[in-house]
Image (cartoon, rainbow, N blue to C red; front, side):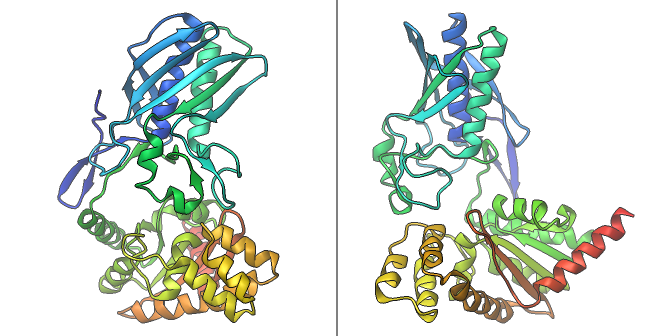
Length: 385
C-alpha cells in the first residue's frame, strides 16, 4: 500500500496525512472504469482532491466480466487513529443504458434511515463531496476512452458492517455499514494535545499580524458558512475544532478585542449546557439541551421524548418545526449559549456567536453578533478599497 507523504504541523510534531474513504472510492472507481472501458489493469491511480493535494493510490483486486469491472484501494489513514485504516474500499463499475453516472452503496456501506443527514433517507451513506469525486473520476475515464453511455457505480467496504458498530453511525441513523466521508479528500491527523497547540498557534499568528477582531469556526462547515453566507474575511479567521473554550481563553490572554464564533448547531448547542469542549468523547448532551428548551417552549411530554431520541440536531429541529416551536425554543437556547460564552471570556474579550444548520439556515445570533458582523463588514470594505 502506497503511503501519502503529505504532512501537517501539530505543535512541535509533524503528522502524516491519509486518504479519506471518499478519495479511496474515487480512485477505485477510476481504476474500475479504466479496466471496463480500456481492458487494462492500471497499477495505480492519481486522484485530485478538494484540498489541492494529488494522491497516488495503488490498485488491488482488479476483476472484470461481461459489462462490468471492479477494483479496490486500501485506505491509509496516516497518523490519524481511524477505525477504517487499512480497509479495502471497492468499486464495481457497470455499463448502463441510463445516461450519466449512478452511484450507490453495496456491502459494508451504510444506509441513511433518519432525516437531517447529508443524504436523503434510503440513500447510501456516501456524502456529497465523495459522490462528486466518484462521478468526476468515472466521467474522466469515459471522456478519455470516448464512451458516451452511462455507468453504474457500486461502492462497497468488506467488513464495514462490523466496523460501523465502533462508530457513531448507528446513533446517527446510518444502518448496515460505514459512511463514505471526506470534505477535503485527505485526512489531517490531530492528537488532542496537538489540536490544542494548533488552536493557540493559529490565534497567536493572527494576533502578530495585527488582527484584533477574530472569527472562530469549529471546522469546514462553519468556515464555509462564514465565508459564503456571512461574507466574512478569511484573513481574520481561525479554527478551534472542538476546543472552543481553549480558543476563548487564548484570545482573551492575547488581547483580542472580540471573537465571533460561527458554527453548526450540531456542535454549538452543547455550549448552552456549558460544554466548551464539544468532542463527543467529552460530552454530548445535544438532545438533552434541545429537549429542555423544547419543554420551556411548550412542547408536550411526547414531543420532548421524541426530541431526546432524535439521531441528529437537524432531525430534532424538524420535530420542533412541525410543532411550530423551533424559533421559540432556539431563542432561549441561544441566550443560554451567550451566558456561558460571557462567563468564559476574560481580558475584556467580547464573544458573540452565529448558529446555523444546513437544513434550516441561520438558527440564531447572540445579542451583540450584529454589531460584530457590521464591524467585520466595514473592515473588509476598508481593506478592499
